[in-house]
Amino acid sequence: MLIDSHTHIGCIDYKVGKNKVFTLAGEDLIAAMKKYSVDYALVSSIEGAEFDTNGRLAPVDKQVPQLQSFKNLLQFIRNNGDSLKALLWIKPYTEKTTAALEEFITENRKYIAGFKMHPSLSRIKFTDHRFRPYLDLARRFAMPVQVHTENDGFSNAEYVADIACVYTDIDFVVVHMGLNTDNKEAIDIIRNHDNIYGDTCEVKHENVIRAIEECGSQKILFGTDAVVHGIDTYVRYLPLIKLIRKTFSKEEADNVLLKNSQRLFKVNL
Ligand SMILES: [Zn+2]
Image 1 (cartoon, rainbow, N blue to C red):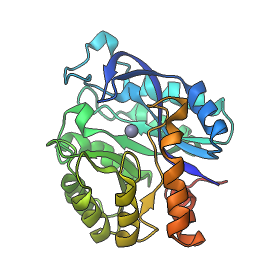
Image 2 (cartoon, rainbow, N blue to C red):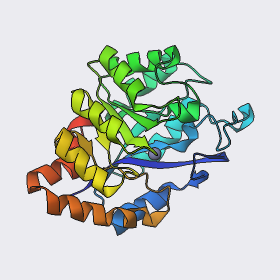
Image 3 (cartoon, rainbow, N blue to C red):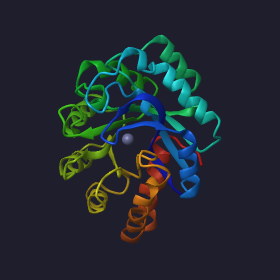
Image 4 (cartoon, rainbow, N blue to C red):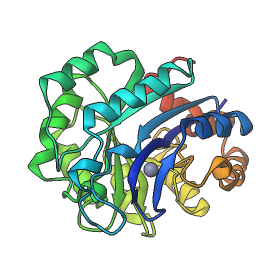
């Protein structure tokens, strides 16, 4: 059994992120999961990206409104049985929380695992007040928050630590454990905060092993960014899965590859 806690779909009219993606077909994610025996995935939509690859705010007529992107994502999830749950990628730069959003979450709670927050692609520092209404919503609905982390002045892992000390009742997953860093700072933060977790996405294998050793197997989640690198995104992760199973006990490996996601995101398999 394998759960991928970090995947993406979505179609927009501009390229986003370092991988310059704009079309990630839901069918490709389903095909990838089948091909590589991934049993379940938490998925967010890149339609939530407000700024493009070049750091430019996407024009209004090209932005997909927050609630619309959530509706698109849920439509996809409902069409694909019991193997997916949503992470709602919010748009705090161009939008706000609304009564309609709350109503949407209430009505669709069983399909929603939590929020996705991407300070780099919203170009807002994670400690900025504009994230607060969304964090309040996460608290109210008891939903975990997946946060992109990278040392760029927006998404630094230390900012997540600051917020996690205020929102002690929310669980945070610092994905990438500090992209383009040696992961050391993020690993220290995960170890020192009960409500902060890390994921394996784009992290060097040796650092994943170190993170599990230092933080404990209950603090690290398997995640990949599929299908940002296509249907065969998982080819990059097969050696990591093997290494985790070889290095740790079955129970510890299962925590990372399956159980932590199940517990945090309330996945019933
Ligand atoms: Zn991602």
